Amino acid sequence: MSILYDRIYSLCTQSNITPCKMCSEIGISRSAITDLKAGRKKDLNATTAYKIAKYFGVSVGYLLGFEDK
Image (cartoon, rainbow, N blue to C red; front, side, top):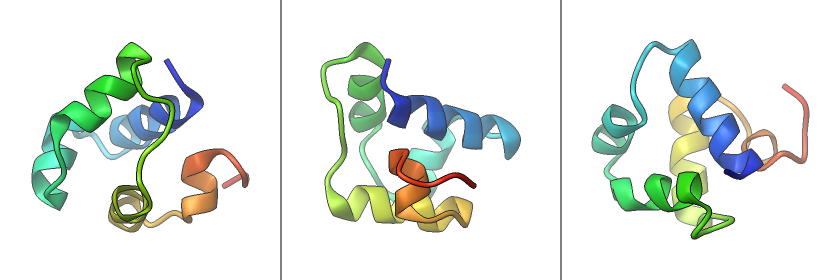
C-alpha cells in the first residue's frame, strides 16, 4: 500500500465512510483506489487528487504526503 492510499483510507475512516462511498459521491472510479491499495499504482492524476482533497477539505499537498495536516 502507498502513503497516498493510507491517507485516503484514514480520511474515510475519520469521516465514517467507505472508500467505495467516497468514490461514488465524487464520481471517480473505484479501481483508482483499489489499484493504490494493491500497489498497482503509486499515484493519482491531478484531477482525481483534487476531487478527493476537496471532498475531505484538505490540501492536495496533504493528501499526497507533502504537508502535515
